[in-house]
Length: 506
Image 1 (cartoon, rainbow, N blue to C red):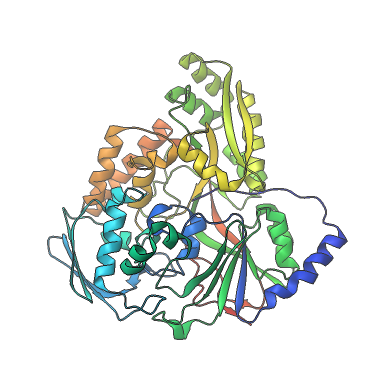
Image 2: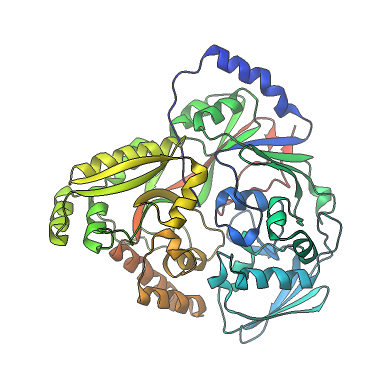
């Protein structure tokens, strides 16, 4: 869940030559170098909801239950099997023989510790989802028993969420949360060797990983290159093996390069505009509606995504479970927008719009939105912000509008729905949106066992969120990444996970 992009002029021959000269760094035997936009924020699984963290530590930590490459099916992780009681409240999981990166065994007590933290720790961004856990018990080192307060249909799916990664209780307590968050002890394919803040995360193969014999790479380096076009040039020049967040405008050019492979992986990504409901006049629904009518989403898709994206009409992504294809999609109607502003009794509306510097798409969208809002009498003042600061500003409420995106982390709609519509801990994804009926329905949908009734609940939630304009849905798009031809098995599943334990560098 993040933001993103930016245009560039013609690169000089000297600059390209410098890139080529530095390209030898990418040739280190067995080390995969991946360019990304911004640096991560933490390696404490419960204290982030950002892809920039999840996508890295999904290969540093392991979870009890995994999601397969299709993004549709749950498969064994640290838990090799599980059973569920007839009443749906007791889950008994059998843990496999696995070790943490420091060589200590992964025990059921570590799972008890990890799941208790995500439920109870004051810093947990995911506590609401796990409040359904009544008790956690390690029957023995390999048997975990979880008892819920009531049946919860997506519970197994929530165990696959990166925030529910299993951490070492001993290491966490000995190191302390802050130190652990910098250089954790994990049980995934790779371990953190070094984290140079703002520069790169250096991972090396974890010899204690329970599937270590299947891991080809010696290591992975996630390198921060904030400017999108610079990042693409580094891949073209061979200085990076791969890069994520390919700008839409660069796709056609990169596809013509015989040394590269452009990946358009099916995704659960939705880009949207956050609105801060606590800032007048955004606290008035008519004003939020006016903004939605004023923005021409089709023009944004055509201009900015070059037709690769599709207009979004729901917070649930197209193709995901319970997506409501017939959800309301407000047309571009400036006259209607002006009428609504008049009804709300507001004029000369001034809004602060956060824009990530170096993010080509975010900057292009911001300019188009600024122009479109100006047509109805709303002034959007663009505030360029370093991507590393945007999140904190949104959490603090220091914004009126901000472009963001979300990708699902579990296969069930409960996670995003809870985080966006029914969550107090994170102020409904920093929008400060409040609707008590919606919050109650989110909780009801989580425990409804009848698929038809549950689907009807999610349809109602999608309709209500759109009616309330909790945010502005913009577009859906695939994951766009690029790698050099000598890299095999690089890419993401629909939830965004990179299977770097299967990636090879020839």
